[in-house]
Every structure is written in structure tokens, then in C-alpha cells.
Length: 200
Image (cartoon, rainbow, N blue to C red; front, side, top):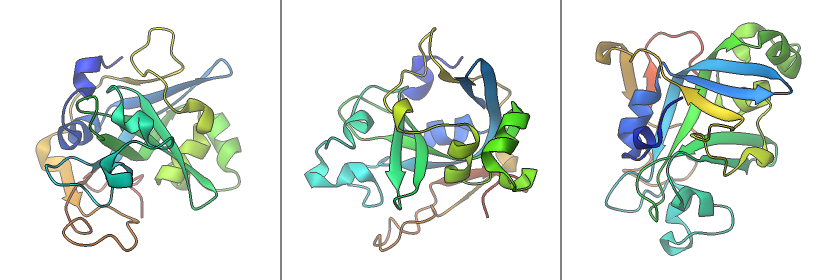
């Protein structure tokens, strides 16, 4: 299990270093797990990141974003477009909104259950996007604010060999709508180059 100091760093660093690690959800006695192959960093700058929830409300926490301003190593799960849950991990220093969105996974454990959660879609479409992976891993609002470093937790990230720098691609974050520049194009999305489970 990755320890708290791993997460208590800037989101850009954590987003890169999470690639290749394994996200695990202990669900109904079964491990649902996948290798992280795509991430995005948010609010990791001296100026307010206008693509980040934490920049709203004058940069102050709201009931929705309070977890994001909290201690690193906790889950931040939010609802979007009225239909999807997205899973993030809080990073950085407490009091400053900082988080990494988990965008895509390669399924490694509990695939029979993932298949049922994502039926009738083929395996390459189970977890190749942030809303898809939460459905596959049965993650929702009840998992918001959980300590990913707790010994008795139900969600955590396991260590694994680092992805070599030459295999990490970067580019603009996805789905930012009307976010102005430079935040719209800033290259804070990271993925394993050429991996089949990276989002389309």
C-alpha cells in the first residue's frame, strides 16, 4: 500500500508516479483492481487553476470540494453530467486544493465482476475512461473522503515498478468545456504511451 508521503506532494509529481501502480477496491469480499495507465493533475500551480473545482467559490472549500482541501491520501469522488462518478486522489498540502484524477486502468483482478458492471461492452471498454472505471470498480459517492492509507480501508493503491519516463506521454486535460487558456491546453494529463486502455 502506498504511504501518505507518496501523496503529500504536488499533483503533477503524483500524477506521473501513479502510472503503473494498482488501484484496488475491496468490494463484497472481492478485489476489483487495475493498473493505472492515465491520470490528470489539478490545482497544481501558484495561480488558480480554472479547470479545477477548488478554484471556484473564490478558492474556498464548498461542501462538494471540502475533501479536496483536506489531507493528502484521501479519495475525492464527485458526480458529473448528472450520470457519472469520477475518482480522484487528494495530493499536496492540507488547505490547498490539489488532486489527481484517475482517468484509465488496465483491469488485473476481479474481471468477471467488472464485465458484469460494464456489460455488454468488450474488455477494452471496461476501464478506458474515468466514468467507466468507477462503474467497473463499483465506486460511487459512498467512497468520497476515504483514507487510502488506512490499514482497514476498502480502497488503496499498491506499489509497482515505475513506468520509464520515455514511456510517459503528456498532453492537455480532457473535458474542460469553456475553461480559458492557458488552463485549457496546459499539459497536465499523463498516460502510458500506446497503452490500449488509455481513454479515447
